[in-house]
Image 1 (cartoon, one colour):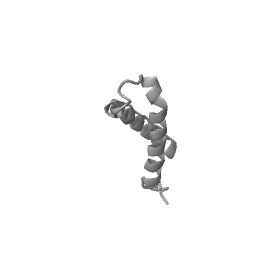
Image 2 (cartoon, one colour):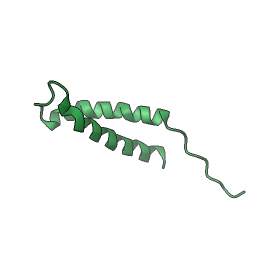
Image 3 (cartoon, helix red, strand yellow):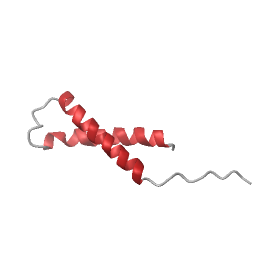
Image 4 (cartoon, helix red, strand yellow):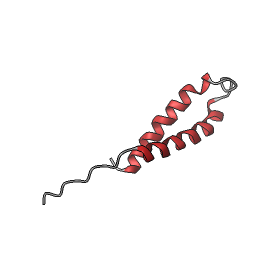
Length: 65
């Protein structure tokens, strides 16, 4: 999996997680989901950066020679 696929998958998973637990925070339970989307997307982008920074590099492919 290349880094772009990894980043896209990480963003979807992290954004889903952020949106799922946003109502648990005080002051945000009454907000509509579209108002919580921008702060959650920013947090998810930060999480993607951390995911890519801490993930091990992909192993080199064996060329047979």
